[in-house]
Amino acid sequence: MLKELLNTGIGAGLLLKEKVEDEMKKLEDEGKIKTSDAKSFLRSIEKKGKEEDAKNREKLKSMLKEVVDELGIATKDDLEKLKQELQQDKK
Image (cartoon, rainbow, N blue to C red; front, side, top):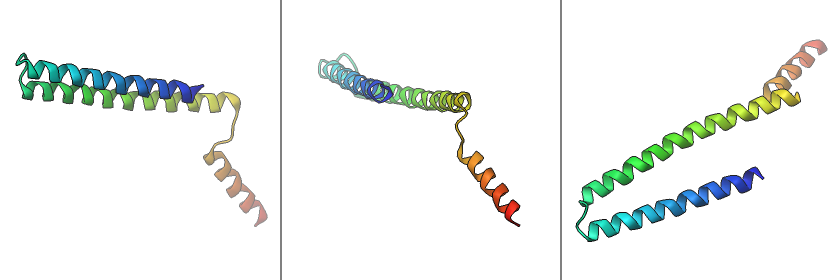
């Protein structure tokens, strides 16, 4: 379900990007907006999208860590500590 949700979000974002670019091109062709303004606008949208992506990734990491903690699933660090303890016990 998570995969489908992510794919839907990515698809929607790409579709929206294409529509915005098409509309900006129409405005440029009609002389209602300067090319430099259109490019600046698209860059600002892209920057905001990247910032939002970074925030969402951090939120997802946090949520996954919380789920792992709630379920009591061993992490890499937990397994490494256990491995070290077992090696020390053998000595």
